[in-house]
Image (cartoon, one colour):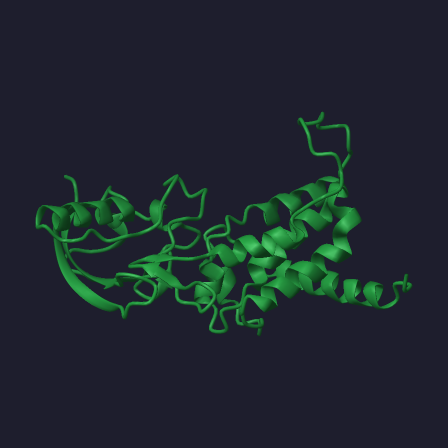
Length: 257
């Protein structure tokens, strides 16, 4: 027999970036345990529209745990209570009948709220833009054996590339640090042959941009790894620190032109 439940939702509502936000309480009934969290939010929005009210604004795209758009804090946890799970892949069977669920946007100064549960994460885009480039030819895909890469290096690069840039690491960190995100992106590109030419410049540029965007420093609390839906390891932060320190030394000893 299909599990259904009635829920009380406390949802953050904010009409615009400059408006003062507040929580509103809603009831939803007969929610299937097999539905996803976003499907449950769709049902809520349909109820609001039928009642002549404004639906809840939230980000989503692929709904397959790939794009990183579904940024919600659910009962105080970015993406919700299930480990290594995005909001769109979180199913209602992990909640229980009669439960009260508090839903709010990711909280971090560099992620200003746009409306309701939507935040502006373009700071991440600017970090990528500052160092996400290579001088190697970028055209059609080359044969997999054209550039031999040791399996250990390839596996490490793939682990880093798993980052979807959702921002859960920032929302979970008490310091609003973006070190896990930046570390994953730097480690991904710096570990592969195509990215070696810009390795030191990339580390300096991306960390400088990250700091300029207002993200806090890392104090090794580990909440970022715990909240990450792709289980990105804290090792990426350690690698970023090594690359950044080496880049600073290299930059210091660069001859003046």
